[in-house]
Amino acid sequence: MTEQKAYSLVVIGGGAAGMMAAITAAREGCSVCLVERNEKVGRKLYITGKGRCNVTNHCSAQEVLAAVPRNGRFLYSAMNHTPPEFVEEFFRSLGVPLKVERGNRVFPQSDRSADVIDGLYMELRRLRVPILHARAKRLLSCEGAVTGVGTDQGVIFCKAVILSTGGASYPATGSTGDGYGMAEEMGHTIVPPVPSLVPLESPDPFCAAMQGLALKNVKLTVRNGKGKVLYQEQGEMLFTHFGLSGPLVLSASAHMREMGKESYRLSIDLKPALEEATLDARLVRELIANANRDMANVLGALAPRLMVPVLLERAEIPGERKAHDLTKGERRRLVEMFKHFTVQVRGPRPIAEAIVTSGGVKVGEVDPKTMASKRVSGLFLAGELLDVDAYTGGFNLQIAWATGRAAGEGAVQFLELGQH
Ligand SMILES: Cc1cc2nc3c(=O)[nH]c(=O)nc-3n(C[C@H](O)[C@H](O)[C@H](O)COP(=O)(O)OP(=O)(O)OC[C@H]3O[C@@H](n4cnc5c(N)ncnc54)[C@H](O)[C@@H]3O)c2cc1C
Image (tube, rainbow, N blue to C red; front, side):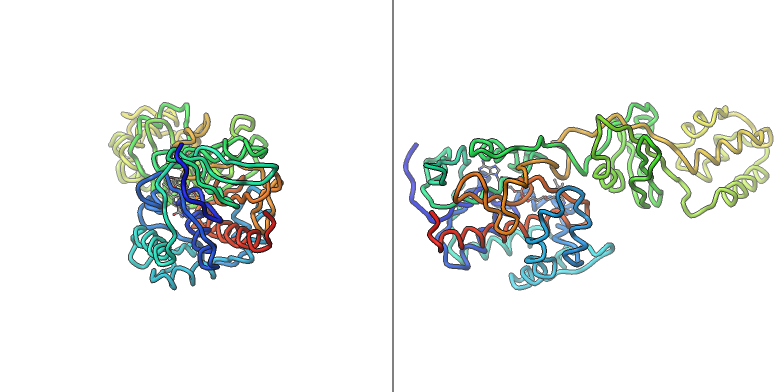
């Protein structure tokens, strides 16, 4: 390894949390170096919100915490210090105008995630923060205090480190979970990383039969083994060759936190706007109007084409059954199928396909105000690397901004107080 220049602070990871941390520290006049393994910063940011980047959620700090199912209390201080309002103002001040959409989701007005990255990058440049494109391998410490970072391009000496290497999902973006090992070597406990906001696998063969079918305006309900409703929402979902995906399913998965231990039941209401009696009356009208046609044709007016054979099979009705021959019991089964189309769940897709990683550095070992490690002096942790994750809606990035800023300020304070 060749020896590199020394800085007061090294931030590892040029993602959302790391860039916010580096900007915060540099604005306080701290000599900071950002280490990012990719050629460009913010590669994951680039793909967020389907390329539009749902930057945050236009709501109060309290409402953000309500969207954090895991370790929300840990975020109390950071979120109140850096609420969405601060984040929105921060981006506007960087020259990134924002807009608020359905569900209070905040996006750049341009609908381009690249503008969010450019805003951050230009601010890093203005502040003259050097970006070293190297892969951090390990943290160096001496007598319980951080002394530097070993990278594949040499050692950087420093007095403080902010570790913000993200989780382990979408590894092609650079977030391969490197931070877990580095934190562990410093004495931290890693809560096993598991996928959240992730597509679901189903053993039901009809999912594959309907692959590619997107259902719009359906209501998805998730119940646990005891029948308790854990999630219920209306929106869009998708059948795939392995099971289920789409916005509703990703969101639902964040409520199914015991996959493997708990059994979950998914039920789709294909006609949420119609009460059962109204739907039955509608079906009767179709049957009368098409009395001599096959059921397979009749149902085409009420359900997507790919779904018709599945509905009939599950309701145990032969496709060639004439509408006028349909029994009362068969009609009842059909209505039941429309209102409660159940899908079994085997488990989540692998973590690489998850929008966020749940699990990570145990939050009890981190100071919630400054993000300082309680294990080693001069180490700070931020972003998805921590054992916190949220529902969809801009909340996960909001966590990255808030913890990144807390860590940046925490590190500056630590350096100013000469605690090293
Ligand atoms: C497809 C997709 C869409 C999403 N959409 C949204 C959305 O719209 N809104 C929202 O709130 N959240 C969204 N998320 C989640 C959000 O992107 C993450 O929660 C957030 O980016 C986490 O920020 P972070 O800085 O902690 O980690 P990351 O953004 O993952 O950044 C970590 C950085 O560290 C670098 N790194 C890793 N290891 C090393 C190493 N050893 N040395 C040097 N550098 C290293 C990586 O290259 C990476 O640049 C989405 C996620 C995905 C995958």
